[in-house]
Length: 221
Image (tube, rainbow, N blue to C red; front, side, top):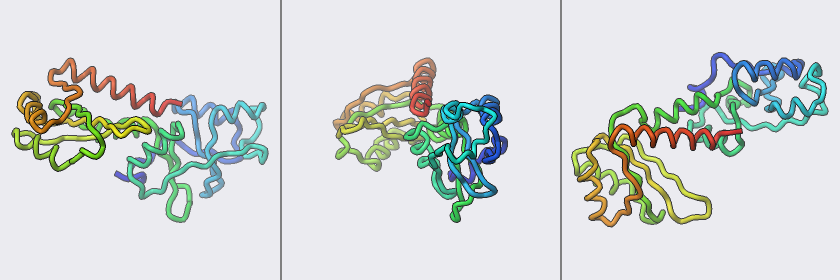
């Protein structure tokens, strides 16, 4: 899934002649903290609610040369993972999108990224979850998939989390089976460390809630 497929159809960009008051009003309406500023198709940068308050005068045009904007963006052909990384690293509520000629074509909002994250991790699909803890040198996608499939199940989604400056990682796997007993036993025979597992609906709901909250905190501004 690419940036050009996720563009918001409702959130507009600001013109440099728009006032700070107008920008704040739009931010409140769309529940965001950033908006791109454009001049025709030229992307001038991203303005935040903090930038506007620093201006002092809300009736002043945001294109005032005294205002210095930072200019994060992605290209329309970049993958959603790169959008999520940009949004999380810079704590953005919207990600501006440019074409190959660096013309502004739209933005991707935080709520769209969250919705697509849910789809990527197969949250709505029935199944169970296993979290493996391992050294990054021990990671083998092919072996993990083989173990799951040897127990008459399939991998629905898999993602990796790793603390900074650590050689360890957590591999979270969602599989089609809700009975994980045989899969867990096979992982243990291959000397995998099972950090946690979730089979019943209550535990799965809590797991999804925690992952959602972690993702929200990751993108929090």
